[in-house]
Amino acid sequence: QVQVVESGGGLVQPGGSLRLSCAASGSIFSIYLMGWYRQAPGKQRELVATITSGGSTNYADSVKGRFTISRDNAKNTVYLQMNSLKPEDTAVYYCNVDVKHTLVSTFQDYWGQGTQVTVSS
Image (cartoon, rainbow, N blue to C red; front, top):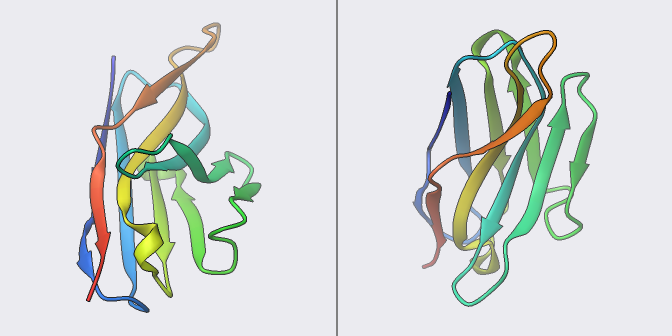
């Protein structure tokens, strides 16, 4: 079993910055992909950014150049540094982790509970 816990959400002004953290714990052999998704009220969930174990990143066009995803493999933690925030960034941000429990296990997907990010004056 794997627990995924996000933190760092809150209220910020437009143009401000915020850093989200997501820590995975439990029965973990390795983690391949870690990422952030977001969902605004009345909208579908969308990908924000992902990062592989090798450090390869992928960003949504809407956040490219403003957000930076990184990870600390020793802590099984992924971060999302959000700069130049806009009101349209307001959403619940969810952490996703692709976990291998043992050497011979297949990968399984785990989600956090989400953390609210509100960008407003």
